[in-house]
Length: 290
Image (cartoon, rainbow, N blue to C red; front, side, top):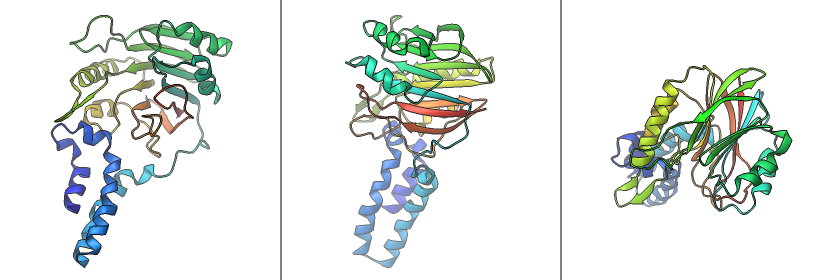
């Protein structure tokens, strides 16, 4: 059994329908205490075998055990938050998001009914914004070339719009800012039904591949973690900080980081969660260095 756990950790991308495994991959380490108890009543060899998944887990996730520090040199700050289309307190949510003074705030599930309340709460401190479908971006820095980003899966209609791209003029140069909300996945007997999410991820990958600017910031609810195989092409272009787990969903008892701050042409030097708002997700804050 220790060998099986270690193999699942190492070769998770080879497991058919492994999206469910990859979403909660760090939690596979909980098998170790059980294996240790079983081994105590067996042989010394069994005890030694338990070290194998321990070593593998630490190799994969040991760097995430300690939370990310705010005490790092950075040039920009970005906040990502799926605010929930059932959020009853948009103004309070915005106050919580801007308390740390971010340069950019990317939001998902912004309904037309709630939009005026969000806009009013951001006020003059964030004079630049763009809203495309149900995703939105508020910025301290001027925005240009704001447009809808087509990441709609082929099986959905034209009213599904969950992506945007804009160019921000920062003191450090222009940055292409993407805000996206990939489709949800559903649990079934074979794992996760993720065809729509994967289709949307491929379109996002294609958009990033065609991006003319060197510096790119991606804020989004990707509905999976960085360990998911479908995001390998995105992570080949963009990086993020994995010094802490920063689990963002579900807000009541976070189990996975599905909300992300990623960047290309600059470094994401820390990522952590912010206190809970009226959403079923926790906000995520990322610090960026050029």
